[in-house]
Image 1 (cartoon, rainbow, N blue to C red):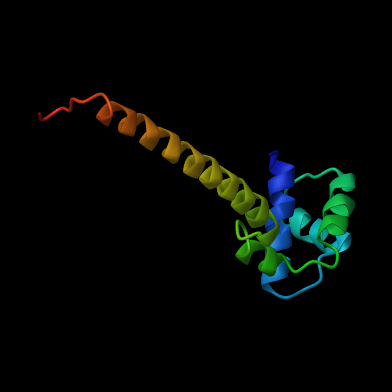
Image 2 (cartoon, one colour):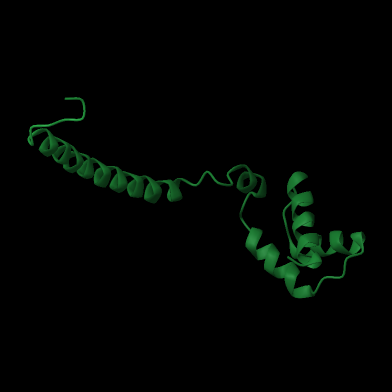
Length: 106
């Protein structure tokens, strides 16, 4: 991430912390006050990216996505079913050793 991108992200965090709407003009004002040269296109890109979103809410919910949990749970469920299917096969092999008439402690 470039210095210009970091400056805009920090500017967006400052605005969100003060509960101020994140606009291209406000992002530009903060980065200019900080003395960081940023290409003008970045202001509009970041303003549109954050438009209608609560940045504080996004930060609090990092990693707690319900949408990502469902496929992970389904994958884990499938792995558990496969492991459950493998266990009876292993037990059958152990039983076949007992049928031979000798054991480890005989």
